Image (cartoon, rainbow, N blue to C red; front, top):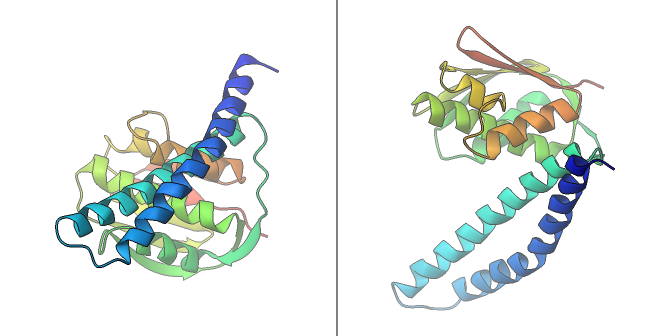
Length: 194
């Protein structure tokens, strides 16, 4: 096994090991949220629950990338409508961050991971492009995110590492047999079909 693959496997194992104490933190935060706490304690507990959920999401993204790099990513694939997938991705982001339009078709993906990937790619296109909102147009198995500024393009393609979400999303799309291409201020994501 090469050193890169060993390191990827080590990262994957570490991500697995982090999830147990993180689940404990999240579980106790949720329990405390149900209590009648005075302010500012109630707000602090809410922040702990939100932050631990965000950490869980980051660890899951890192785990998937490590599995891809180690050649061990083999998720169960499910047939799902691409428009439904795009709407779910948009709903997971801040309100009005992504506007979804178009017509879907069945695609074969790992739904939860692909939803997260699409959300992260859209978020990165907005954040690194200086936009408050982006459009996600669904054209069957193609999903087009626009506008995509020249500064955001290398980030969403995973070529310039400024965050975890976008390169993890790009790696996931490619690992599932899809592709990403940036041209004319658009990111075109092609998802595999059944």
